[in-house]
Amino acid sequence: MLDMKLLGDGLAIFSGGDEGEWRVISMRPVKGEGLPRVERVAIRHSLDSPKRNCGWSLLGVASHVRYVERGEKEELAARQENLGRVQSTRAALIPIRKSLEWWQLAQDQRREIFEAQSHHIEEGVRHLPAVARQLYHSRDLGEPFDFLTWFEYEPSYSDQFEALVQYLRTTEEWKYVDREVDIRLSRE
Image (cartoon, rainbow, N blue to C red; front, top):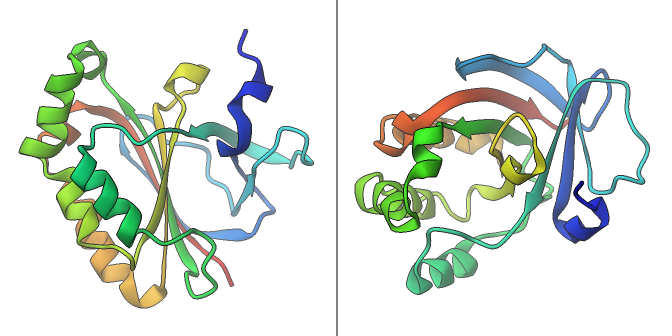
């Protein structure tokens, strides 16, 4: 059994229910099974923090950046802004699970699909610093999704963010997604 204390500061628990800082604007399954509809999403960063009455709870851990080369990592670090900016009152939580076929590929094969074919990093960098983002890993925790992708942005950037998401869903990489839920949120 996994010792949850080993997860450290990168832990995030997204709880969908009737309370939380983020109000759900829309919630839809993109591929595969969805999640029960909720009104709000709360984010906790500790297993010791109070649990909420919720319809679902998703656990993830921020980890080391993967599939990037040094120059890409440096550019991401230089351009990325932190989450929690006051003006970023829109957010998206997009849990994703990839197919067994994806996980059976070697690391270099996944990198080839992720960046050389799909241009995931290149396209994402174009939207920095307007979009703050964090990827949480869940696969090794026995969670129903492999990744919890969290984005925050200003309302005026909503159309550009939608274009980014639509682009990523047309790539070679997305062909390996077998479950995805798109949850759009607002903090007022």
